[in-house]
Amino acid sequence: MKSTFSLLIAGLLIVVSPAELFSQGSTIYASVLSTKLFVVGAANPETGLYYQRSSEDTVWHHMGARNIREFGVAVHTPSRGQLICLASGNGVHMTTDGGSTWKVTTGWQITEVLAVTIDVANPDFMLCGTPYGVFRTLDRGTTWVECNNGITQKFTSSVIIDHSNSSILYCSTEDGVYRSEDRGNTWKRTGLNVGGVRVVAQSPRDPNVLIAGTDDHGIYVTSNGGRYWEKCEAGLDHLTFFTITFDPVNPKILYAGGYMTGVYKSIDEGVSWTRKNTGLSNLNLHSIAVDPTNSNRVFAGTQWGGVFRSDDGGDTWRNVGLSGSQVWQITVQPF
Image (cartoon, rainbow, N blue to C red; front, side):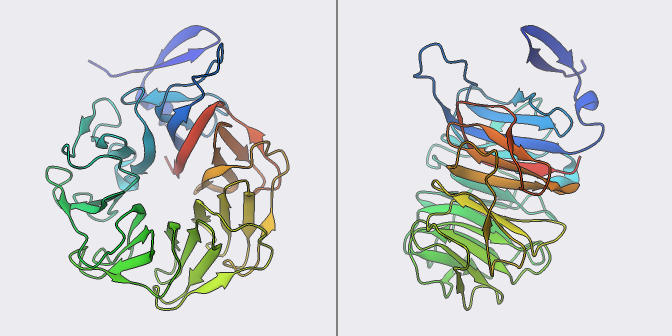
């Protein structure tokens, strides 16, 4: 039987096939952690994973389990959306058929998964970050093992598999950024000696360039794989950052956001920053993502404000749905 997705528009239930939705353009995925369900009479979306086509503007489709807390989403780009993993409150959820069926791959001992990533070259290799440290699978989720040798503060909020060498990994923790050169068997703390690192991102062009956002110490950048870090200060009026992303086409352009910051943009690889908040009515950001098919198209996930979209590189923003929800992560895929 041909699988379909249901879409609710103006009270009408419309059934569409995946082929119709994934025929051209880009796809935006948004993980909703929680919603304002406590507001009487409020029409808020359910928690879980949502997606839309870049041409759909304010229309979102729900995918996977409903009413579970979603912290993050990882999409294996070469599979064109067939392989997707979700970081959720009850483990890592995975689909290998584009969302038609799902399974929880982790056991009872791995919960509150805050981040998940998939090796682009070898999708059998995945990492997830939890309050209890880093876990790894080498068999596409059949088995997961803890790999925290060398990590002293295990609370891990982001994980990276180096896109040029999958033996090299990075993770952000309560006491800095750690690096592994043996697929997670051992870890060493990098030269960033600050606490509360919430996110670390890697340049899509130069794997030695990384940028980190912290709870209350601002933003730091390294150009040598973490050996030395420099604090980014020019133009930054805030210290708490939850999300940082590179423009996949021009990695000198970065976007950053966090607690009541709105959007900051850098065009010189983090040396200087400018606030870009025109039309952004909610300044509490959890995620920013750039469309790889159109760098002027940028998405921002907010706390209780849903998703905002810019079509001019962050100069102006407008709300495009999921209002009343806490959007924890957004990713945009070129299919």
